[in-house]
Image (cartoon, rainbow, N blue to C red; front, side, top):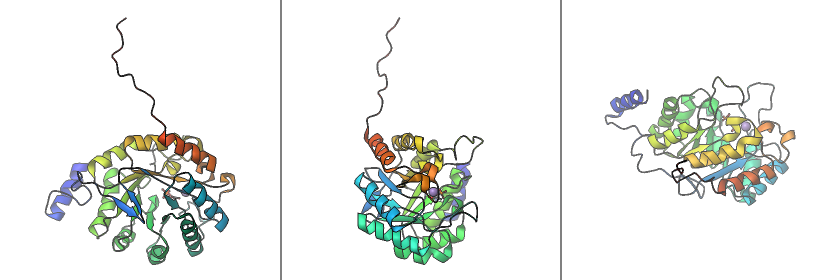
Length: 288
Ligand code: PEP
Ligand code: MN
């Protein structure tokens, strides 16, 4: 499957490498404001699922910054399964997120859902998220390719690795090399969790491409209690960072409360990310 894709690109480009997989020995570092993604250290991006109010987003920004997050996330345009669910504060949400990011001295990342909103989101945000549901919105990808803003490209819920990388190829081909891939869980036969976190795909795309890759264990699991371990596993497998949802009062969140970490949960996750791993037996077992 992957070979098929590479071969197709070969014909299109007239060489045997696609832009996404080309020169994977030289890794790309994407700068979001003054923060490098894909450098020596893994980064933590954190913030609420949705921007709800000045107080909510500003408190969250300061709390996560104090605990080690380097980029603030927050949704102003929300892709919701039901049209009756909260759709986001729109431009007011962008303003509040920007204000909170500036106050805590953090760059901000937020989703852009529509081609119509690209200009206004670019005015406020340091990095633009393409949500999972929009991964194959090719008109949006083409427009974003022309902005040159850093893009966080989430993997579609049912997208193969090939489709995910082809979406990234649209951005690079259109002139935007500032692409960070984000694994956020895929649909499988198993409904025990919101999605299935495909960590092997993270190792695979790290091997296949030169692009940084981050993991979103919040949407991948939908379950607050296991997000810390999944984040730890993501870094262990080679992810360049994690993006997680944090809320001052998750039980009152307007979206994704069940997967939102409290400030205390976030602190535990951060401690876990720097804790040593369990030892592995290195000596051959003694003969009985
Ligand atoms: C989000 O980041 O809040 C979000 C909606 O993510 P995804 O597109 O991965 O579902
Ligand atoms: Mn969310």
